[in-house]
Length: 374
Image (cartoon, rainbow, N blue to C red):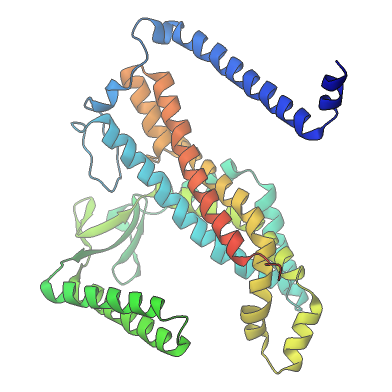
């Protein structure tokens, strides 16, 4: 008895016991819900199965990169919906980072009017619900004229209520293009390998490799200008209003939070670093790029993980404006097949995998920029 009391006083033993109790409790609660779900009227008569994924979907998906049709199996439709989620999330993260960075620079500017304007932008976007952003920008996109009455905002670019009409680009991989691309990749690889031996040689190789790849893309790409045919455009790449509204709302809403993250990171760098750079004759731009930002990243990266993860999860709001992302596809499939639980599990697994991959990537970046003890 005395030995048990002594053992319980050890922190490591209590931690193991608490962890064991927690795991058993989670397994018990999960088992309870699974048992109820398996005996519910929704599943009980048909059983739990993902065989419906190999059956024809039977519904039109809309915009997608795989060109799926109603005759394609459900798994391919789910994959196309997941790809739409990834595309809009990645583009929104890039736009959010760029806009948020410049808003943060404006926020710390010595020009009072510019700082106040950036503060107004941040406060408005952070305090308005994302759903309101989404509905507003979707209404804006739908307010543009029809294709027949649309005016070109730029040569070959039209803004219509059916989306943004852009020139159609076709890529043809000729032998010459392949040679340029392979040569560019080889130069980039050699430049990466030589980066520790000679910085100048590595930079020159990377520049030549990048130029070769760019030349390959330009030589292999042909453009077709949009032509109005009846009520629609031919030879055009159309970015739908749903995609634009979801992209803009996600990017603008999250850019307010990102701007404050960048500002806090920059302000977290010791002021003496800037003063030392100024005494060496460095301009403000070079000071920011070479001294401040590398140190600010150590402060910025951890909150960026949760912000970008939240942006990806918020992309599920696209279901409200009929953007064919993974949640909308899952809902449509659950209505057609009656597999509500299975479709819900697919949604959960999809966002879990995406956010775990994002978290792993940002954790790796955080380790790269973190301070290392000598």
